[in-house]
Image (cartoon, rainbow, N blue to C red; front, side, top):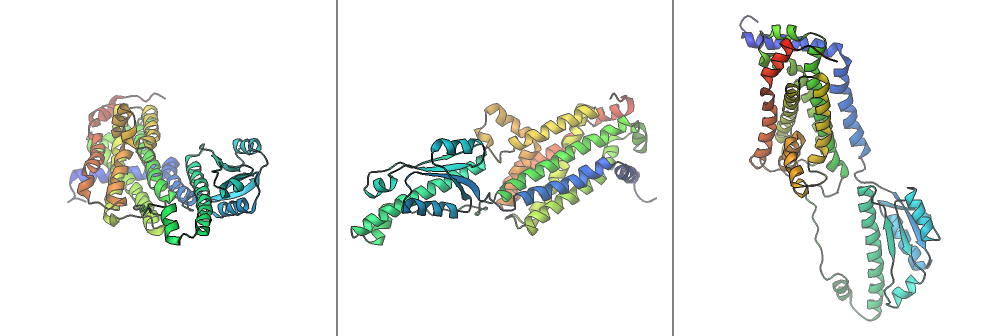
Length: 393
């Protein structure tokens, strides 16, 4: 160790001291390892089916013909829909939907088949609940598809009876053929869509909190002057040594998450392994930099952790994965650039999910670098707090 530069020795000494703190305080174990692993397993297992399946649907079939029974069986055969109940009246079906017994129901009035065969354009109604956006959208798709197929089947029979060829019938019923291509997530897998945003967001929240907490407890337990003495009152060395063990642990957890979802679960990642490794590193460093920044802004254990929690929760709305940022109010759109998860999501979307080179994502990557570097802004204030502040519960 005599040939090792003094600054390196100090960083390693503080890092060793921090390892002892991590070992003794079980909060670090749970927030850095246990809870992140639990979140990873929970979300990927909960969404393992990719899409919701067998969602309960009701039927109000007042026509009760062989044609309506056939169409109901086809609806029940869909992956996302399962016919669980039949109701004599619309009011009963609506009451069941309001009680959350069913998520949608199909209403077929009396005389529907006769009107359809005679070309008198019957009306078939379907009702679906949008309390849950995902279930509502999927059931709307199924109900619309089944009624469209029913109408097309009757039209096909009528035209075939009039002597039209299959080619003529197909052209009449579907003048324009749609060739649909869903890029990168062709199965519309909600696990791919949600787990790749929610899990990193929760990991970033843990990093925010642990970073602010680990600095704040130096004041709380009156160890701040000892910590600074080991660094010769150099706050940069003190912070680097303190965060080094945490950085290694969070990197291991982050890379384990990436290996699990992108290699074990085979989530699409056109960008390859290098982009995943770089993005994981930037995510951890940016989150730690933000945690240091927040503690420096408000050198209080309670206030800094509260703000970190608030910022982490708001990040899920500001990331732009569920609702596009450019469609938000202009003031909210501007605020979205204050959240590290927004930069992570855009870099992931460009460099990992769609496989573009890093040069296409460089503004977002530089944003993550800026969050990591933001810790430097308030280092003098943190030093002053460690040497002069008195902890107030």
